[in-house]
Image (cartoon, rainbow, N blue to C red):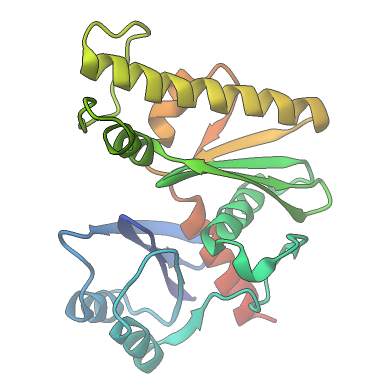
Length: 248
């Protein structure tokens, strides 16, 4: 049985998934304050009897990580040239964020049946990723995420402050500057996602929508559209790619 470690190095967090064959057993999360180290990674590999590893990165990380993975495991670093179980029709595959592709593959792995799938990632950026009924990755859209929008307000204005946020209910009508900013940013994103889902559904009959990323559980409860929330679609997609390459 394959013991796989899938590593998603993002802009704000690194997520590591431990899989036995096709089943996700555990997820480890590290942020910039407590980054993944070579010692921690080696301990994971040894303790979990890891045989195969795969890594995708949209953020920066230490090159020693690649060295350890290569020395201790059968290591696959995801690039635009890696074989994948999905036809990539993106016009510039070398510029496509590999985490976007992984989340799409993760959704098709869970869905199984042939149907149009839209994957929305509410991470650092909010991305939409469309997969056709024929299993083709078509592309989508990229927009600023919550943190980017909150940072833009004090950057481009003189008086608006930078505020913290958490995934709690946001009122429609803000009664002070902080709540007004949160209302505009969070409710604006909710309306944006709902509106785009509706436009996709007008074009694709029987569309299935998956939501992933840090805020997916929160947004799932706020959206009017029916969706499936899965925080670890990228890790699931990475594992699918890893097992696909291990058997082809």
